[in-house]
Length: 358
Image 1 (spheres, rainbow, N blue to C red):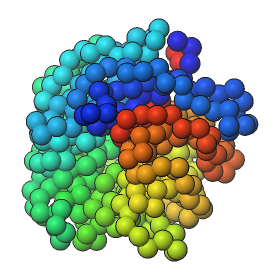
Image 2: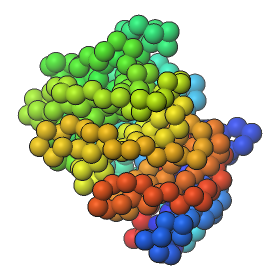
Image 3: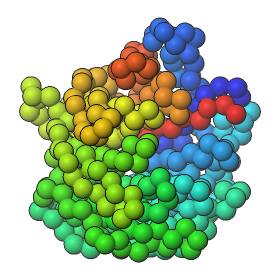
């Protein structure tokens, strides 16, 4: 299929059966109303694939299975129709896995288990077959809020050199730092072993700027974004800024969700569940700090995640509680979002990832 596809992960139940696939249709990139997501149906049936990772080179899709007894699944892609073919499924090494990411060589997946606060390193063979975890790190401790009585690993990110792995633990108010042995798939605590956040922050997702000089963390509970400078030699993050994700007029309930850095490194996007917006920040090229630009309504409720197309031309928002996906054009000049206004139906969408044609 000579088209860009969008795969949507979901929570399964009465509405959803697994991963759904859409064709991105762009008749005229300058006219946002002509951008649509054309539903192609259920790509594969699998249990609560709440977060997806796509290997663009090998044309593989990986998914967590966010259940009490967590799993990780691997799929190959049928290029003719976008359907997914199961390869295999293994244990996530913990409970309630909610995020996974490939290392830079595509040989391991780092899986964050929210339920029990562990991180697993899952081997990936050349053909996409998964092995049992090569390593499992169990976090321990607590913080100040009711939902921080134990660890909750929420997201891992690998630095550009594939030497260090950083894990946001919402329950501990810490970003854990690990040295990564890519030859064995092993993690060992770095020195220092973590960077502490303000109590009650609830760090959720972390992403590096493409040049590797800065990292950004969105805090679910505090609705803030922290900016860190990064010492790549030592694998050390140093906080240099914290900004709110919310406008001054809004004082209702909110939780921060997704954070992504534009491939150019010029902009950072974050989503607010409650305020139901995606916010654009400008990135200072030298200092790495963020400046609020504008918010964009998502046209639905609970924008849990959004995915940016590898070409950085489009962004798709998952409105989890209104069962819709919204695709936006990204202005190449200023990073602003131009929503299509056309919603695609999707049952409880939690993650959207793009697959460009070969």
